[in-house]
Amino acid sequence: MDSRAKCIEFLTRCRDLRGAAAGITTTSTHPVYSQDRSAFVPVGSLAIGERVRTADGWALVETLTRERGDGQTVCNLEVEKDHTFLVGELGLVSHNDSAVGGRGGCAVGSRGGTYVLTHPVSGQVMRTGRTGNLSRREAQHARDPVLSRFDFEPVHRTDAYSQQRGLEQWLHDTYNPPLNRIRPISPINPNRGRFLDAAQQFLQGGNP
Image 1 (cartoon, helix red, strand yellow):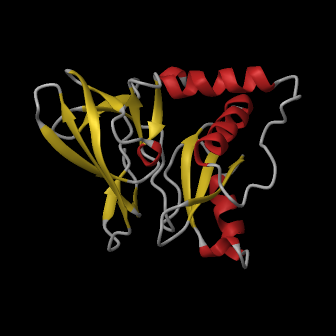
Image 2 (cartoon, one colour):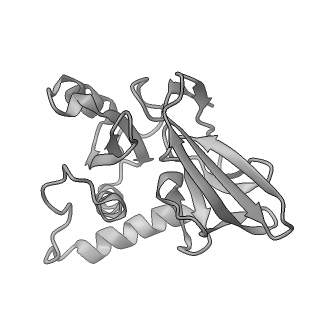
Image 3 (spheres, rainbow, N blue to C red):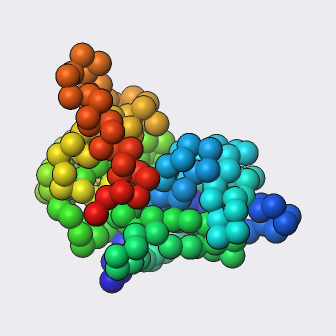
């Protein structure tokens, strides 16, 4: 099953151990597997020189280019049972849980999850959050006089509360968004470890 929406294009170019180079164009929140972090991470948070897993081993990220597209339509692929698949000429290991972002709406799947608000020109992540209903939260932000200026992009789709809490903190730590006023999880929250463990399991592909 796929869903379609207009989105910001993000070009990631990598080179593998054989010297072959190729690029993939995705949304900034689409997850690929980072060999260095041992977890799925959004391509928008990759670093130059970071190793990403491929079908034959790993490849180095050479360039990262974020640019606003011309309203090009992209697809969100859902793989039955196995949630990972290979993308691009180098066969980068990707995860199908990221929804297609942008003003076009949310992909079919779990109702809740995490999201980011990105600047429509620079692509900077301005705010992160979680919700039990992504479609409803997108509509709420669209009516807000300040937040409506930014693009709403779903990132992780899950209705599990512990995963949502941990993933929200993970997004906050990854992007350090200027509009986040407080930490998603207090350092003294007794459930902090449990929430972060649930997020790590999700990022490593342990989400059912």
